[in-house]
Length: 297
Image (cartoon, rainbow, N blue to C red):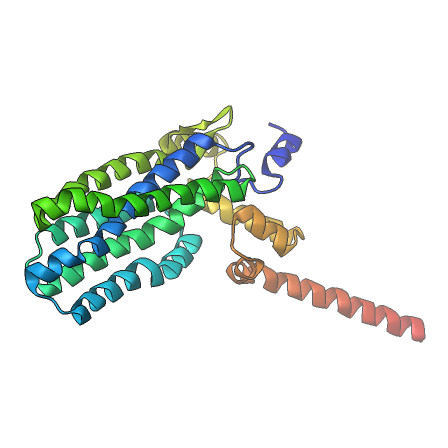
């Protein structure tokens, strides 16, 4: 592979595939549907737990506050962490939290356990949404509005059907029937496994993910043949960013290539490089000043 072909591959944003990968968007939408369906069950069972445990409206309000704090207000912070430290298996981790919270909620027999259960379900949602949205953007092929719309349709559909299922299943059979919705969490986790694997896509067919182990093995084979030390893929990312910065690539362009939210984060991450660049800039300006002095003399 020559330099020209490599350049063509990294032109623009390399995390975007050419063409919209609808199969991945549909999987994202289905996962979003199942996740938000589970989330919508919690406010739907308020009348059941209020009558069973004789809760006041203030106690119900506190349950809502705790749930919203973990599922919504916490979400920007989990999103910020996901930008700085992307983890391909965050989707499965989020759904595991949701599964645990659901099972705890189904068998909670006091107020504190209910609060703990809804907070765990909410935490699962806050972990799920930023990473799932990120995967949808990666599969957009540049059609970000379309990708977000498909992703959002699933969530809205789940929020709409969740209360209906609660009325059909939980109302007749009681609180323990909440555990039946664990099947939805398991199904969502199964769907998310396909998204987790979609870290490296097949360049010949972007709909097919490449096994990460195969990609790592190829990297290690190349390094071994070149008699270079064994490094991670993430180290390649830093190496590229460092040399690009030293080579004069402007921060805005480099930020887009790396997938950072803004150029300031890129500059903050590679301040050791910009420090050397500032020294070089000072030396250049110093040379110009000396040249002007000599011309004046």
